[in-house]
Image (tube, rainbow, N blue to C red; front, side, top):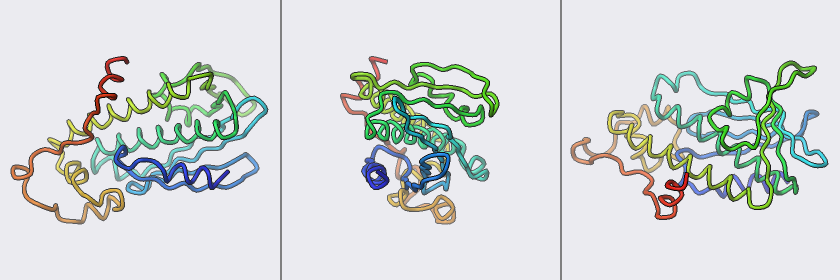
Length: 225
């Protein structure tokens, strides 16, 4: 199972991502521990999953981020938080499909659930509950019939919108522009990039970055939202 999940993360198309990822898996008394590392930012998101007879239960969704990054480049910081959460959701849905589960129930602390606030449209239902561990938020994601395709399509559109925001922001943010133009950005930590002189000519010579061209299918999907 672990090798299948790691191969899935390795198979992610880099041209569709702003960052690259590594997955670390382990077994704990609480369940399967999946830690998704964002290489460039050193952010990590730890997920605790527990298979049950009818569903996949997610009891942890803990994001650890580097405080210096937000001051360095807020648009890229926001993009990093959004992308790692979306990729983690992709991973969870893939895990559920591998285990043959039709429903995914996220029973999370308010702190962990806050990382999913921006993605409420992806969930079938959301409710609050008082448990022995304190107040928890239950977010249900159902994989009935053709719903997985709907989920992945919605995530794809969210990432496309994220890329469009980065394209707009790089016009006035020199570091963001340098990062997006760097051919080695998916293998270079941000701190190392920060210490590297900007490559190539000036902005006037190179023009604005043209990021992530929208395909005809993506245009159609955007209009349907």
